[in-house]
Image (cartoon, rainbow, N blue to C red):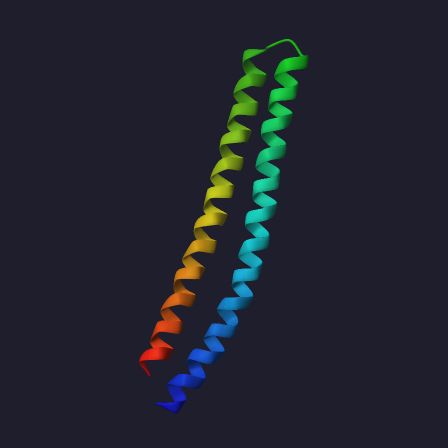
Length: 92
C-alpha cells in the first residue's frame, strides 16, 4: 500500500510537469492561430484577391486551428489523468 502511494506521488509529479508544458504549447499554438487569422485578414484586405492565395491561406489557417485543438486536447487529457491519480490516492 505504501509502495503504491510512492508510485502515485512520483507519477503525479511527472503529470504536473507535463501540465505546465502542455499549457505552454496551448498558449503558443493559440498565439500562432490568432496571428495566422490576423495575417490572412490583413492580406485579404490590402491585396488583390487571388484564388490560389486564398486557398493557401485558408489551408494554413485550418492547419493552425487543428494544431491548437490538438494541443488543447492533450492538455485536457493530462488534467484528467491528474484527477484520476488524485482520486486513486484518496482511495488508498
